[in-house]
Image (cartoon, rainbow, N blue to C red; front, side, top):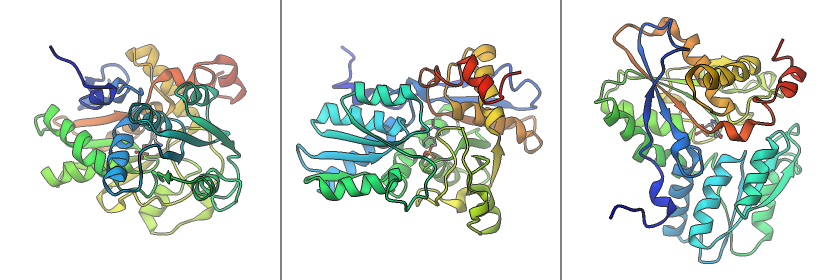
Length: 326
Ligand code: PMP
């Protein structure tokens, strides 16, 4: 018989799928690392289980404990899966920009959810960073995950996602393109791929309203780069420890409108029903066209599933209200 011991045994080993339509004008092969095949429907299951494994091994998380995280949803889903299987309580602290579906899903998974305002500074006591930290100080036998600075996040991708991409492409991958939030995906995959072949180029996809691109190019943390934006999952107003700027060759920024429009195009033209950051990622690939040659193999990673965006990206009224649909 062939079965997993529990649902956590199904995390990883996701497929690589050829892009056929949106990338038609590119000279190279473009392959999508399709992370919605994870049991929580996102790449974040990988780092959730790694962070919890490491916290248990280090004695930071004890039996019956409470896991607390400030999360935009996918990490919360991954953590909630592990918490359910291993008998922990789960508290997610989330910003009010996130889709209602994501909040409902977390509650459905048995997590307690606190909703905090988005447009306050990270050090404001009302921010989700501050609220998560405060709860972890108040609740006994609790552990604050901190996916931004917890390096088990990058480690998960170094140990699993990176090797999978290397093996699935028979070592032929030449470029890796991915949206950057905490930085765990780009840093772990990028570090692994460069350890196999230092010529592989690693590109980050950033949003307007986020600090990454300017910081990478100038070394300056420019507060003028920070303003509210709509794209979910990527871009930051802080520099997480998981972003390893040294292994990143460059960033490209994608607008909110393009990210939304291309998320829809992925569904309708490729049959790929994916989240907002997948639209940003594929538009990022198209923006980088001049960097690719005919023998190149470009891998783009799609983080999460479209079901979490049915009230937004896949809703015409919402799209019109944002000015994203004519
Ligand atoms: N896309 C989505 C939908 C996400 O939830 C995240 C995680 N914030 C990312 C992209 C970025 O991934 P990472 O945190 O590994 O940089």
